[in-house]
Structure formats: C-alpha cells, structure tokens
Length: 425
Image (cartoon, rainbow, N blue to C red; front, side):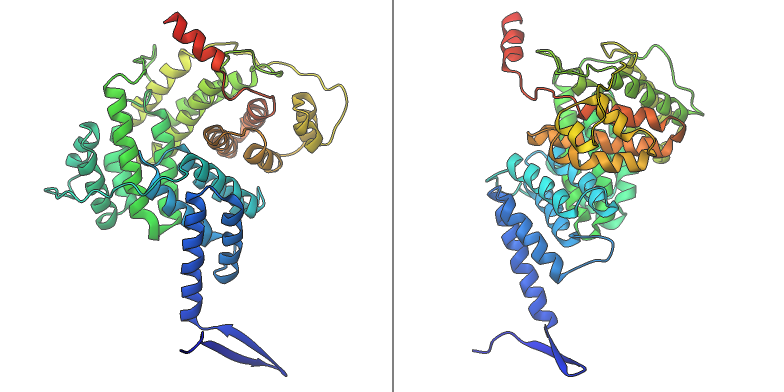
C-alpha cells in the first residue's frame, strides 16, 4: 500500500516538500469532520485546535479561519432544531469582528463554537424537507407557506428559490414581506434574517442551507406569534412618512440608544429585564434599517411604524444617567471591575470605530456567560457599531449605549422572578 503523495520543489540548495492537492483536500476533510464532532460534544478546545489546523491548510488572505467559520455556519444550519436561532445567527457578527480585526480571530471563533456547542450539544441534524411542491419558484406561494406555518413546504421552496433565483430574491420577495406583516412580534426573527442573509453572501457554498434554516426559523416564529406566543399586539400612535422611513428608523434607534444609556450603572435589581427589552428593540430597528433598501415605500413605512409602536411602550427612564469616575483606570481594568464611569473615561477621545474595537473582546467573551445572552449581546453591540458608522452625528450616543449595556453586571437568570410571576398569575 502506498503512502501519501507529496510534491517537491527546489529553492536554492533546500527542497520544500508540500502535500499534493489531493492529500491536502483529504486532510482538510478529516479536520472538518473532527471539528463537527467536537461541536456536537461542545468541546471548544478541540474546535479551536481543528480551526487553527484547517487555517494552516486553507488560509485565505484577509479572512482568517474562513474554512473553520464556514464549518460553523454549516453546522448551525444543519443542527439548530427550529432553524437559524440566535446562537447560529451570531456567527455572522463574530466572523465580522474576526475579519475586521476587532477581536483575535481565534477568540471570535472560540466564542462562536462555545455558543453553538453549548446551545446544541449532542443534537443530531434537523431533517431536510424532501416534500415535492408545485410552482417551487413562486414567491407568493413561498410566502403563503411561511405565513401558513407549512414548515416542510417553506423550506423546500426556500431552497429552490435560493438555488435558482438567488438569496437576495428570496429575502426581498419572501422573508421581507413575512417580517413586515408583524415586525413588532417578529423583531428577533428579522435580526436573524439579516444575519442569515449576511452569512449566505459571505459563504456562498453554504447559502442554500443557511436560507433553508432561515425559512424554518421564520415559519416557526410566525406560527408561535399566530397561536399567541406571548406577543401583545403593538400599535403606534404615529404613522411613519412614506418618503422618509430611513430617517424615522434612525430616530427610533437613537431613542432606544438613549434609553439604554439610562439603564442603572450598578447591578440590576431583582427582576429587572429592561436591558433585554431594550436590546431587542435596538436589534429590531437595526434589522429594519438593513432590510430597508429592499422595501417598497409602503413596506418601509410599515416597518418604521411598527418599530415606533415598540419604542412607545418601552418602560423606564428615557434620560441618560450621569456616572462619575472616582479614579482613572486602564480600559481593561475598568471593564474587569464593571466600572462604567471609568470605562467611559478610558474611551473618551477615541473615534467610535476604535472605541467599539476596544470594547469588542469584552463584549464577546466576558460581558455575559450563557450562550443566548452572549449571542444577543454581540448582536446588539454590532448593531450599535453599524448605527454609529451610518449615523456619525450621534456616534457617541451609540457607543455609550454599548458601554451601558455591556459593562455593568446584570443577572442572566433570576429564578425568584420566575416564581413570583407564576404565583401572581
């Protein structure tokens, strides 16, 4: 039996030995399988080891750990039982942070692998819809499947439309109208649609699977909303102008950022979930802005009006709190001690992009500890960063909102509140 085949090239007096193309492919496939097994076992150490090994074989300039991140995307699309959930969607943001240089790529990958591994440990692959459908490229029928909670048909049509017409067409003609039907209740789903769209563009070989998972998520979420699901109807007291939905959405994003800045600087009181409500409202407004270029004037006005309804019913103070800085500290020390005033002082004078870059490693790895909370924290901080870039006149407000959301210690699970709620029901 022959061993691996190698190609030999000569450089001066030394010979450089490289594995053949076939051997390199086989090695990459073996490492990828190992990475997928490690994800199933939530073995982050092995995931990172495999990711680094894969990157040495398949390095892409400017896109560190690309092959390993793509393996995460495929795993997230395959195993998330109800489609592209928050732990799966946050891979888009962590990939952006790694490729932009906001975090060490290995750290970004490790956080993504940890979130996915813990959220879906020991789960098998979600069954792929094999149902036959009539007129598979008809977006109206695909939209009807999503709104009618026909799960298998929605996935099958999404796969066909993504493959034949492209992901942009699927988002524009199916996902966007579904979200616009009730953005107030589907705000989290809208944020995941945007991230699924991002992942499909970034990893085209996995695009069909990502879009299928996104269709499943949107169909399941709409089914929950339609059956009650704990979502109260939202009505806005004002109608957004048809010709300036973008301006209206930025104004709403700023209003939410201001409320985030008004959060208590110290540990949250028992039962306080206002930071979750504000994070959700921020991600909703950000998603609406990302989807706006695909909207008709009526769809854009509808998205802005529903966002306005959500913002109008937010509770708590709307004026930012003033925090004092007793002593100057390096940013890392201020973050470690959860000192919001010192963190603000440490970042003062920096432009928003540089400040968000300094905040990113803390937001990804230290601000929260449970998979869901890590996912929504990273998504919210990335949303604030993009808003700061697109609305530079108010960049400092978005940055301060990012600090106010991530720096103070906040409880991630309050069983006493659960018990009180149940006793009071």
